[in-house]
Amino acid sequence: MDGFASAASSWVMRHRRLIQTGRVLDVACGHGRNLYPLLGLGLELFGVDRDTAAFEQLKQAGVRTLAVDLENEGHAVLPFEDASFAAIIVCNYLHRPLFPRLLKLLAPGGVMLYETFAAGNAQFGKPSRPEFLLNEGELLRLIASCPEIVMDVIAYESGYVDVPKPAQIQRICARRQGGAKQLNRLA
Image (cartoon, rainbow, N blue to C red):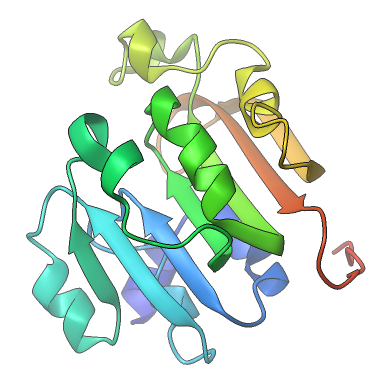
């Protein structure tokens, strides 16, 4: 498990302490690199991806898995009730039409950790097509795109990173308003 924890997103690792109880959904989870560090914390973990290659290992670890082609059916078939997740994690994935559904899945007081590639990433490799890259400030606009759901931004970053590989990214940690009031402890 240590190898998986070291491969997890530094953004997720930095903000994982905000996820204290409940259900966690990792969208486009791949091999579960962001789920493994959450094992043993008493959380109910869910991984969604179209590629099922790692599902057996994730299931053995106690993660519930669901095979979904997010780009063709995800916004319609994520079979979860609204406001049913304490946290939603999305890393290195962008499908804009899915964003309103993700916001609705987040429970009041729940945390969204989102990190993906941004415009300018083409100079470092893939993804390089504009439909897979966030425009300047777009993640902030997406987090506010569902009028009936108000999100408080805890942290936001946009720019160049060199770990795990050179990339241009945007990332956000935001909490849905409502639910129990929590303090944001700064590290």
